[in-house]
Image 1 (tube, rainbow, N blue to C red):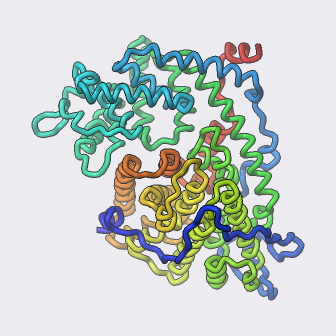
Image 2: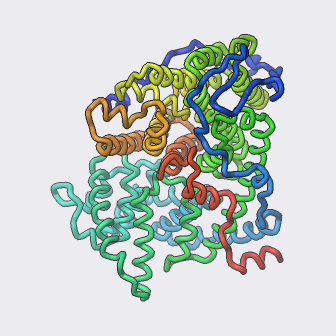
Length: 621
């Protein structure tokens, strides 16, 4: 089956190999310090319609004619963004509240469920990054206690505590076996039916099940068992509108269950989860006002950082002029930036966000050159020019492709120069190779489209995990992550972590963009390949895509545990997969700009979380 071939760890992912010299410290990098000038609009014959004049003034009919709507985010509006949470007053207030939260670590009982709950709430509120050392020390102590006496955390056979412990340990890279759940199963290995009386335990077990690796059947069983029960719980409690305290708690649980069944916590983007959970946490009977106050302050302060980065990114995009000169392409600078916040939200990693936003913008542009604008003959010339990577040999390209090439060439060389200057590594071959691989995969899809050829699913996916652009994004991220151990094989052949993240992004994209691309007669995607290959219905093809996503996540979970890559890089790679689930959850959120994705962007970047007068008044003192 294509699925077993596709996701078997023993099956290599193939692409054309290029002989590259490894980087060496203090060696002269192969980067062009000279920047090639991008021609001005008056020197180019570029227009916005579906016809364009080439250098010989011939009229060429193209596929595109207003394929994409203009950006809903006006440049002047972006530049006007401002926040009340800028300034030292709120920073000082956050510092005071942070110290109050820090004291909580010393007040919870060692080995208690309260310790686990504190860590979990801090993570879901989006503020755990302030307490990395405290959280690690606490988890180390709990883990060491568990190794000495396994009954410490499993007292009274507490399903909620056991599953929460398992989830947190798996998330933070500790060795913990699924044997921890044996006490909740019968002799046949089935979970005991009486567990369904513990709704919080069932929800905790459901969330834990998404940290499964391959061949962990107990977690597959746990997922099926809890999913069935949680859906039944919702159907029984949805119509109960009584206003007593017990019902209020049940309504809060229903809110959490609905959220979990939509997407499990393991698959959610930390920043959007923080925004959602802050609002949900206010309704919890166990809500801690200090934690809530700190989370709101921190979220709104970080939002001011994102606004400034978005302004800077928008100015860069406007200054290079590609959005104006090549108006056939999607102008999605805000969305391109939002991807980076989803992947890496902490304030100290601003440089990664800014650089990867530029990478995303160039990917979107070049994708549209291949998908909706370039003729087959032009794409062949452009792909050859990218492979040669020589600005002195692009005279045969049409002007709009010269713009694309020179913008990409300058960007890669400038980035490689900065990295060599700061770290002594020549990363030019690796950055260049990632773009060559991407363009070659785009051209393969163009050849299929040109000839009307429908590839097998296996043939499609071997090309598509590259054409989704995750390898380009993650290779550039790899060379930017501080303290990343530089391993040539991770970049030349793409590590398994990059492959699995790419697979999740590809399958999520194909699922979400299917309806739009079916209407625009885009290149064939995985759904059509599966339907054509096995005569499956559209519904069955989508179900197989979902199954493949689940398997890819299991492989990703295992790599997260075993890979020598840095924790930061692994988290970004996982977040790229998570971000794809978010952006394509209700359709093509990257291209269509529907109200759902618009509201999510507003809540993440623009609209602060409403805070109490107490916070505002005390911040101003």
